[in-house]
Image (tube, rainbow, N blue to C red):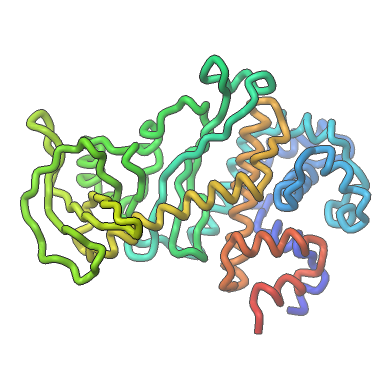
Amino acid sequence: MDKYKTISAFNKWFSNINFKKLPFSIREKISQADKYHKKFAFEHFLKVFLYGIDHECESLREMDTAFVSPDLQQTMALDAISHSQLSRELAQMDDEILWAIFAQLLEKARSKTPVTKRNALYLVDSSTFPLNTTRYPWADFRSTKAGIKLHLKLCFMDKEHLYPDQFEVTNAVEHDDNHLEVFVNQPEATYIFDRGYIDYERLDEMEADGYFFVTRVKKNTKIHVRETYEPSQSKNILRDQMVVLGTQVYLTSPFRLVTIQDEKGKQLRFVTNRFDVTAQEVADMYKARWQIELFFKHIKQHMTIKKLFSHSEKGVSNQIILAMIASLLTYLLKVETGSKKSPFQIKRLLKHLLFQPFEELWVLLVPT
């Protein structure tokens, strides 16, 4: 632990971003951007924005005021920065740089916890962020409503190991099923998604291309039973069958249909092409989809997404990318320390110990 005694918790958290290892074209963009700022480098702005997100600042003015803290000044290597400077930078920041940083961190996350068919699920869903039509006219999708939608693929291994793997930001009017094809890009992985994404031909394509899936069946889905398996010993498993879906116009390949009864007595039907697991495991896979709902709730309530710093389309998009970068940084800190705490728990601890020696955070992350 001696090597951490002079490193603040914030700088340790931030240290997984390696500017020297970014692609040459991205380093050139950063160099060009720095030429237009006499006092502030891109790294300064990045650190301040990530601080604001992790510390749950509610506005750029709050981030501006926070520089009365000597600890913040020392950590950021800045005496002060105005909210107007932050506002301009957020609205003008080259998002290619941010995407490159996200990609670098994602590569690290994947290498530290490799994904296999057995150890991970990809949870796919979206969440809408309502916006004011007057302040965000570019996000208008109805006469009286505005909003954006975050489409997300979350890598889930267990409740302690989960991180954003891929995402897109669109107008709220964008339909979810347009993004499933983009997110399904890693064969042998199992994708969990809601019935709103279901398309018979797409399920067949996933099967043919070597992708696995678990999803709910729509109420009006035509189901043709081909075989009924022996009942499971699990009391909540009602039926386990081989079926084809669709009508005479289009019938799918043979899939597996698992029907369960949840805690409230409601029957749920899951369709999958995983025949190598138990019916209970199929049900548990879909149940894991709740974790992406918790992730959306977390970033809305605790990562400043509910308090957007910018009214411009680019500024809003940049803030969401920054939030995803912050999420990966926290996940990497968890993996590198070997902490048993979840990324959400680590984030809460980090918020209160940002400027303390990393050793103080370490003691809480890895108790003896």
